Image 1 (cartoon, rainbow, N blue to C red):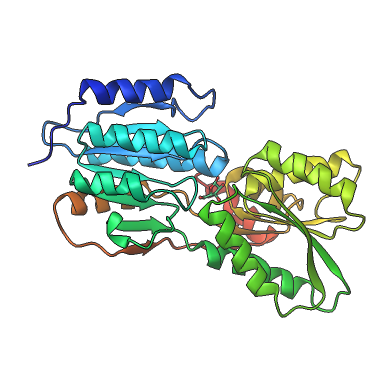
Image 2 (image 1 turned 180 degrees about the vertical axis):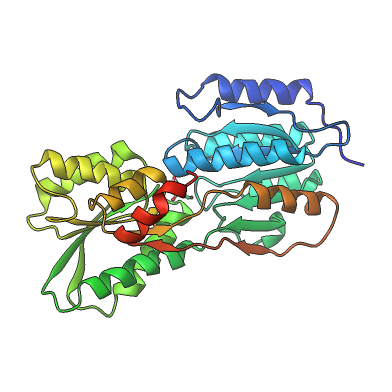
Length: 331
Ligand code: AHR
């Protein structure tokens, strides 16, 4: 019933070539490999992950690997180290191996049409997880499971508008995610639309920190040099916000008091910093997509109809809410 699950020699060589340039991250051997979850008729899924750039990504990888194991899905996993070329190479390898279904979280929004047409010609359904693509052809994928990033940016902006009511000028510096990535584009757009009506709020500088802690720290250090008066940091994820905290403290200032910080994700480290008063507000982005992904894969491989878009439910956290939620936080 399912296509052959054995990797062809060429496919295996391609995958090995890709992973040989290896990752030194700690995402559980995420540079490549397979987890065997099931028997002879098990679904084989090729999953091309973005990388291991953040706590969110590590939790997302763990969720997918655990859910595959539990669902009896044989998972071929690769880590693109935040490079689109690596991800395209992984997708081609999965096509070569004739996996039953491909899932991936695109590093950036554009440039996928050619490789997805190759998957379509090979009859392999594709599921987008976490991040979507920008393509005029929505037949290139079966469904997209992930957050509403524009809404996340709006929630961050709405909180700031309320918090800044009655204040004079509020200068914001923005730490953007990876250039060209859906969450960076959409969180910027959502935030800008939410603050558009607030004359007292101005984004005075905006630069990418690539969703990493070191990137957030470096960019914040540069902002502290170039911007005379920063009131608020809006970071597109917790890791960059945590990097900004390091830079602010190294400059002799107090995060949360001298400069307020708003982030997105709500991973444990971010929630701890929120409960400690260093971050002022976090918009949740849920990385635990594994179970839903395996269910969708099952349906898609069986030829059943699935919704084209599955949006993940999310909330927001104040400092008090973070302190209450922390003991039960899974990631
Ligand atoms: O695509 C989800 C985003 O990617 C998360 O917010 C961020 O932490 C990750 O790197």
